[in-house]
Length: 316
Image 1 (cartoon, helix red, strand yellow):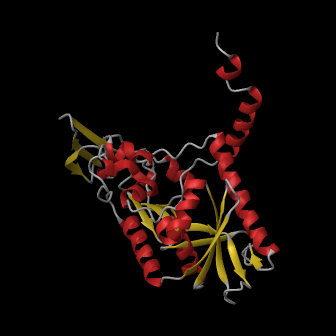
Image 2 (image 1 turned 180 degrees about the horizontal axis):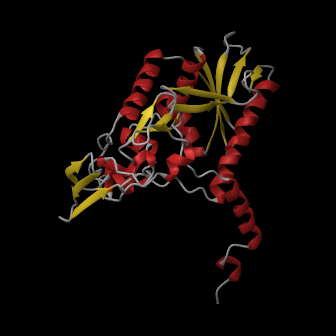
Image 3 (image 1 turned 90 degrees about the vertical axis):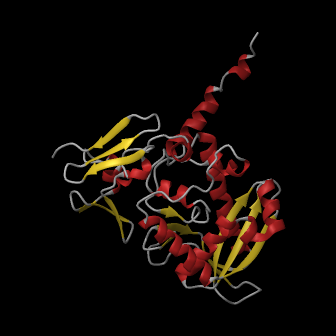
């Protein structure tokens, strides 16, 4: 006989997870999040910027884990204040959390704050708070920030670069043990300029950058298993239809997307919807381009099975 206590999710628990799911955000980012810029696969960043793949599904348990991280990060700021340091959590210009943008507005993030009065230095520091599981925390302690958590290191550098500061205090907690880790990070201008150049290169590219790994079955391709763009990159799946996957979209300064057909800047919701003039960027089609007509707005492709497919906009 089936144990019904284990055969289904209890209604109370289901209600809790559903409540978390309702408040989760599963949309596309307007730009490149600072948490992703350190990804060595520029192709993956390009796919995400162009909304080629479905955004990650955030279930109730995952959303609760995100919330736990936010709570822990606020607690770390409380710890700094309790220790007698001066913490600035909000941007005095807006009264809101510090919002940072670099790379012509395309590299975007939210800074935890600033801190001063540290015993090691009188300088004002950017402060970056993170929570880690056991394995991640041990790796951080062993390898230090730049090697152990390059995505977090890039965030620290980006915030210093934006705020004109040359020190960052990285403080992290092991969620399993409450052990704390503190590291002061020095500003690296060369690193930041390379990071901005990387963003500009990705934003201006009209075709997907080369694959990081050609064979998705190889050991080197283990990172591809967690990539949202794996279906488009390795499995021949079409990208989603929206303005950012259209060859008539232009990525402008200030994280603006402009339609070259209608000569207008597009709001976020308009970009999501797309229109009947949509033509895929050729590198998002799982086939080889063979012909095209700019005036009639169609592009012809030969597909892997030898068939012909025509991507054609509707007549205006």
